[in-house]
Image 1 (cartoon, rainbow, N blue to C red):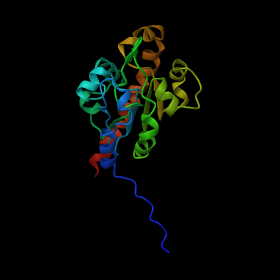
Image 2: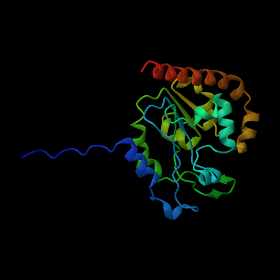
Image 3: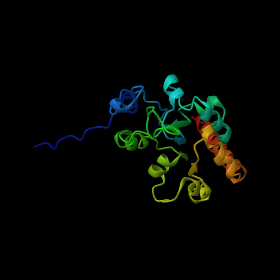
Image 4: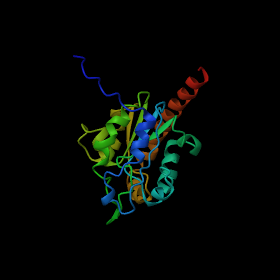
Length: 209
């Protein structure tokens, strides 16, 4: 008897189509499902973030808000590069806007990451830098750290140069930035240099093909 044939994993375009059609937690989403992500197998930088806000839900463009403006400033990255999926993948912990609660948006829906994240991350074989934004992303990508978000950001050298924990760039975190001036003084300059190093390598690889 012939052994059963193992199921071939879907192609990345087919997987992304399935993700964008996901309605797994539709009943819990106040504005309905609209998964927002950016990905290509050639991406060298991964932005592992939290969940889209209301404005991003409306446009369908990740970080198309004040948080995105601040994040791009932190990285020293122009908008056209940021939105090039061949260079930058953007995978929030929850792909849909979860709604708002007291003091800000609700946490990412817990159904999303177990359903899709591992399979998507497995397709990013060329990553050189992962930026872990917020405590929910930290729990997935840096589970052994066992520390607060602030402590994880302070310990940025522990996983350098491949993984860096960052606070959320939301304007709501401006008081945090004022309390921790070392973030912009000590972390951002080497981070921007590392981002440019990775992007320059990506451009160089394209030029020799």
